[in-house]
Length: 338
Image (tube, rainbow, N blue to C red; front, side):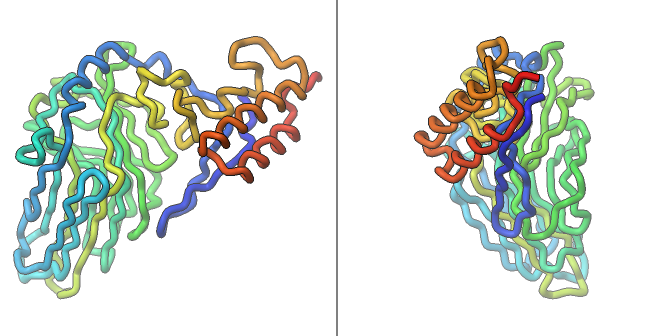
């Protein structure tokens, strides 16, 4: 495996630092891609153009003060203050994808394959009782959730037809987390899902429910739930959803759909060009991308410098980053004769 020669740190407000490998060799998800099926189903997904809003879908504390921002896809937020009453479980606020300007929620079907992502900032004051936010998949078989929560520090998917998966418990109130899901048909003809949280990615997980996937006429969107605290009148929370995106399947999560991706195995959080290729994929340590081996170390370094120059010209990296990449390539053993 080629040596990663630059670590870029992605930071957002109140977010833990997450290393982003800029030069890193591919894994092996290529055999998972069912492009024909995915492209055919996307004709329907592509009609999604808005959100359908359901504030107070649970309204156990109607006296709270709720503020909603409806600006899909750039920003949706729910701010619920003073969620405190003598009885009642929780308030829940939901938005769902829509393809008719928000009049109703889009009905997902079993073969609607897609990738979806959004950044979520969840803040609880206090962190307990629980505040949680993330994706909500409503089906006749139950509700699936891919969420973060304040008191358990969890980033976890569970419920309904969704295969269970838990990331490390690193979430803290106020962190901004990019959550993503890719629903696709794998090479075995099975419907599967990949979850992502910042630069972490689950393995492909096959569905085990009767329908073996998303159930027809399901809805998908985001939700925020805040549990009632009868002893704390100032119990409050906020969920902010930004950069909401849903489109054709993108198994490596690099922002380039599988059908257009010339480098379909890019590791999470790599910086890529319009063809979905990272610098490390354009100039792998093991040898030229076209095949064979490097003639010498100088040829490898030159290839990295050329690729980095192209990324700089396209505005994908800064001049300082380009220089760091080339220096690291020059110091690496790639292409050297043993």
